[in-house]
Length: 376
Ligand SMILES: Nc1ncnc2c1ncn2[C@@H]1O[C@H](COP(=O)(O)OP(=O)(O)OP(=O)(O)O)[C@@H](O)[C@H]1O
Image (cartoon, rainbow, N blue to C red; front, side, top):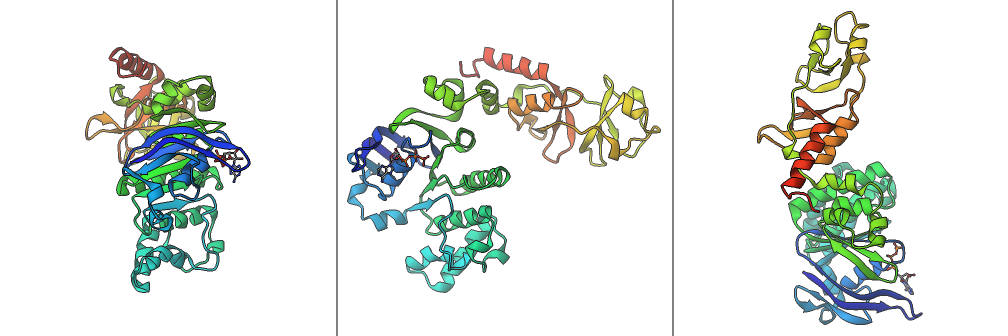
């Protein structure tokens, strides 16, 4: 556990970057520091590995005041990832990652073999290991940065805006990968971002800072959306928070009803449609798009896979367990984005298992509220 106890940092020019911060970072989760520019997130993060020392209060790591630890030794147990990956430009990708195991006394061979494993772990193709950082994309460089930070197998990982410099699609990929890595490695991760959506997606706990280095709220993401502590947090959390909060509610209570399906390439008639619509599926029952009565009438009786109306988002249910894997937000979005107003539910193999309407999702939400499952 990392504990900030009344921690203050005043820079020599008088700027108070962090003001009397009390906060406990639990082991084995992702804790996100989020807030507007200049609110003291980076200063708070860097005080954990003593790149910056507080001017007041203390920080305990597993109960021990970090001022009693020698900074280089302390940092061996604390990985650090920054925005532009901070790689050594004149060393290959493999040698960048092997640096830390070498420093800790491993042989070159062992260090390189460990580096190879780590590159695989972060999803970097082996053929890139011999390249130099400048020969990689921004997203690939960030993966190397994560691999290097993990090289000494530190229990704690500090990440300062690691994904801010890459485009949204790559960022989404890196975020998913971090969640996957964390579920395998169970590190204690402190992650700094100014992006509230990133904070909500990644954080087990989210600390919202306000300018002046004060903590505005420290909560789990669903509580932050449902119960912002004040107007500042409410406006920082942003629009549509009621809808976004649905992302934290399990859609297990939503009844999945039948949906009409027709097979692509096969004959179909209007009476196979339900309310004028059917989902066209492939041989494995996976959805390809929608057929309307009007469209079918122009298709010579056979379902033409090239002429379907594209579908909306899909909503995954775990049919083996009989429960849903998605959230109420996934279910509602599937219904709202569907051309037929029926959201398609699929199983883990991507096969159609049924449909939901917005009304059934909202009725399930009302039931969950009555049952006290939704935070008031
Ligand atoms: N070395 C320094 N000397 C003086 N003031 C500093 C120094 N480093 C940071 N600051 C100031 O401390 C405050 C907090 O900075 P910090 O970098 O911790 O904020 P941040 O929330 O991480 O911001 P950003 O999201 O813009 O990176 C800011 O007002 C900043 O200008």
